[in-house]
Length: 221
Image (cartoon, rainbow, N blue to C red; front, side, top):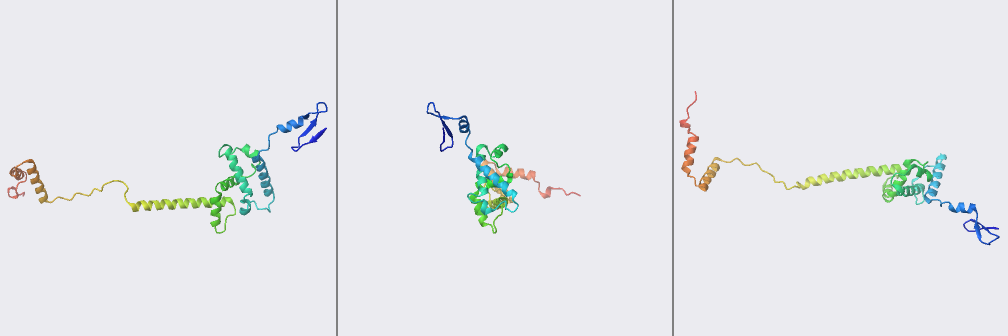
């Protein structure tokens, strides 16, 4: 005698002992691992993408529709984030196949993952756009270009600010020494004579010998 229970496992009752016995089929069924939720989600997304691709009259991407909480690209992006968390940024091809999304182009998978990871900023940027974006690729490129422009602007402002502040080192400005006057040289010489106890008359005698007067200089023909 057999009967069905809630988990749909068939139980066969022994007529001899009266105890419930499992058949070989029941044991094999229970040994199977449960379906991975990532694989189940991927299978649904893979089929959805194939269906869209087969119907030329169906738009492959619609921002409002596909970026809703349960939209195609939101679900795909979350799945990609989960798969990346399993073992690094690069997801093995076999894993993509196991999850049924290998048929979805790499760019589409990458863009969906990017959107989920930058959702708040991406939605804010899209709201500020005049017409909005029709696909995630265009939105991603526009945000990247805007970020580069902002970085260049900040760098330019930094250069201007530094030039206004002036030198930031402890360098001392060296001014050229003014040319001394003859009087200043004589005064300095007299000061040296007094400091070292040298008679000024001796210094004067030496100067007379070293610098002959014009009267003692012979004219050259």
